[in-house]
Length: 301
Image (cartoon, rainbow, N blue to C red):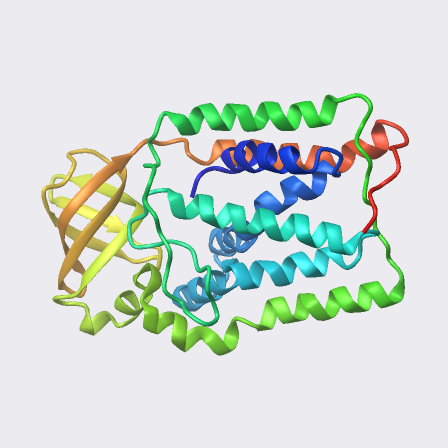
């Protein structure tokens, strides 16, 4: 997926062109919402919690779908003073986020726009992850949010409404967001999104094709190896780099733990730091309104 600063640049500009007086916090939070499950998944993996990696991937895909993200958007919007406006802002930006993700060239993955009716992934593949346009857009995204932080006078703030009824509705929507993926595990696995079915059925792997996006390749005198997102390390054969690299590839399993690489591209390192910058800027946006003095009148719901 494009880094979060790219989403800020494209979606922030589009949102500002339509709604010039909207509280910017909800615009840029909407840019992030579909990535929340992936961020949480990374945290679970990093902490080494004992969760089945395939089930975790299935759960994450369901939550990161458009339908799943809209549930999260509704849970957030219902506790604001303008719930319809905030939900529309979050929902439209979630859709734009997924469409932008689909525009990037993917290797065996994409976005789930039609879930739960279809778990077929959507990928347009217009732009490569190494396109020179992406660093330029990332810089633009950082500058746009910096301008939102420093602009005078500050834009109106849509605050929170924490009455019991609103909190109860938000809790119900959040529970739905957390449990809704569970009944769809079989359908998502059957779709083989992210090669989940192929990687789960270890003994049935020989002869099956697999696509891996941005995985770690390790070179050694004895040959190469790949780190799968399942946590496994398998042997790789074929035309391989002579150095460690981050790669995307299409391959065919020769054995359960041996993959013949049929096509491979290398990616540059340092892809994550713009997203960390974006998270910091988003945090500042939510802190900034009370620090800059009283805002103007908020827009109507």
